[in-house]
Length: 317
Length: 209
Image (cartoon, rainbow over all chains, first blue to last red):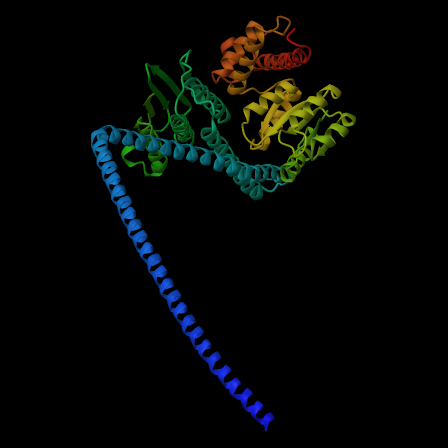
């Protein structure tokens, strides 16, 4: 019994003890809850503070940015105004400078185009000459060979003669053309020498009598390649015509220089022709006219039936 | 006796047609043909032709170099330059190196034979522009060295007329001498030019004097 009592006692004690603990626990929990609330409140307060700070910071930033913008715009306006003022002030000068620059560029471009054209022309002439020239030389040489072998067959011989003559004249034309395009030495005295040289070689080859009057002293002055080429080719064409078509026995060439004016006259004592109706040689004559016009010169032709013709090339340096 | 001619030319067609022309023409014979300067420099001395036609532009050594070397070992051979167009600078240099004539590739066959015959008989061709270069060359050398070959009065006269575009026959008529005489003068001018070029070269090697 006593044991049971003791057991009960202890049970009671336990329960007593238990109720004590529960109370303690409740108190602790309460305290903890309060502490927690306090913490949350503090945290919230802190958060609010931070947020407030952030907002104020942002506000400050925005103000700052705004002022930068304003300052920038102001500066731009000032720069704009100043430059506009400067611009409108120096506009006349600047415009003149710009125009001069444009003009210079245009000149440079024209010069470049001119030089390119010139060198291209030279290149084509050389290529043409090298390619066609050697081929024509070959034809020319081979026909001469065949002609020697076939001298007894009249028909073949005549045909070969024609082929040979054609090849030869093409070769000759090409050489002169290349010279006229290439000639690095464009001075009046050299052009004159070249005309004279061509005249003598050509007329001697054709077995035609000629008289030539050239000035003793020709000034050593630079002339344009255009003048050089066009005068030489015109002169050549006129002599060619005189030999081919006029059936003349005497050709007279006269070359005069006075100041910067040059006149070259070529007369023959051939059969002459009606200048109004010269369809037959029309193209050649037109070419000479065009050539002389290109260098601001003139080409005039007088002819009388059975009396001969006189061509006059005239140009100014 | 036939004029014995060698050809130094790299273009097959030109070489062959010149060879055919020489083989087939009365009074001429073909001595040899070479494709380049190197072969010619090695083999030409043994052949010793009257005349050698030399292309200026060859694949290896130029025709000018070939003439300069061959002139020393082939004293009997006359060198005639062959060129595609009137390349005056190169022609003039070849003449100074020892060539006595030049020929354009476009020259008609009959004229080629004529030019070869002329050269063999002591004549030399000279155009107005080459004459100018010759005059300028003598004028430039005149002040430098008193020992150089000088041009005679007659030679100067002829050069002057040539540079104005007069041809041999006209010069002969004007100076009352034969075309033959004019040719001889021109040939002498070429020889003096070559002697001077050699002296000039020596001057360059041994200094101004």
